[in-house]
Length: 464
Image 1 (cartoon, rainbow, N blue to C red):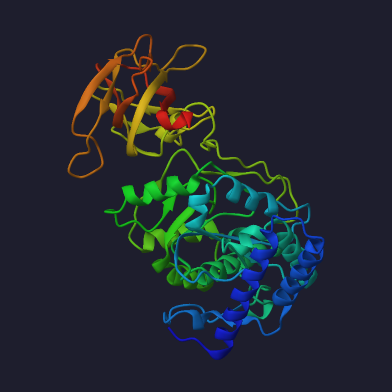
Image 2 (image 1 turned 120 degrees about the horizontal axis):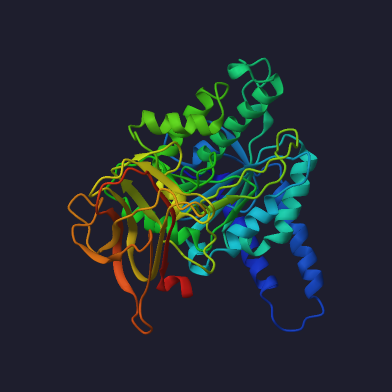
């Protein structure tokens, strides 16, 4: 790996500076000069952030000629010397009505354990052309997340406006207004630059937005999903149903993704392009894990500051209640519109709705990893009129996956549904049953369709 003299000098200076910061901020004894030292550290940080020479050509950081030839300013933090497991990347611009960036980063760091943070790097691309907003935001980030910067867990970058392609006079596909076309086209370029910057920082890249709330220990859930799909030729794993929140990629695919977004930046919104990218790389069907790990929390859009009430009804923050381990789903019934199995499995008012119901029809939940189940609840039918409930059915538990790894090979009955419902709980001190699959099976044909309102699973991990 090539290393220029200027880069080596900057690396040495940054390392010395980090050691100096750590000595100051971890000093425990009373010292009348402590505040003065902290002030000096702050001034040194400002000098490092604003140095005109601290401009790194990203192409120098890799031998991969497929990366975009874009120069990034490192505004705060530095790339890790060794690849991490996961980079969490987001792009942020100035919003007409407030900002959620600090709260988003606070959620990322607070919802992760110390061990998880050691495997994670958060990259923030400040993509607004206003230098005053850039400076204010960097100061706010350096003040609030100084410990994360010093620990190598946060990197703040900026691609200069001169690197952007034309953003005016673009094609008005879908009849959108010119300002909306400009906004979404720039957003595509923002994320193209972000993923290019992140290509060699870790083994996997997780894309989020700058206005989300994270589930507790989301990195552990992502790690489990990667392990569960290690034999699957996936391109994208999805941990949210909204836009481009919670999209996971292998870092080896990021150079191609960056060029793809840049090539078609003016054609359509980013989430549509991401779907096309997945299809072009031969992943026909989305692989979406439920419950969702990220929730959109912004109230006002970064476009025009318009009100935005978009929420993911499958999000679960990992708190008390049914934990519902990450899982995949299958059914041999025809799903009506968008009433998928995930709707019944996720918290909220969603439900699964399908037909026809024949003897042997099933709804199967396959956990990504075996779980010690201590309580389970399945509720079918509407809440008021008692319609579309399963008149004859039972719940079965599977313990081992079959040869294809998509279902269990050994199911044992847990119990029948009574009036369309089953509630089961392990006796006190039982420790829970080790389960990999849970299957709801119809025992006879019925004319009514089937609604499943709740498919709730409690495990031992929910008490930790």
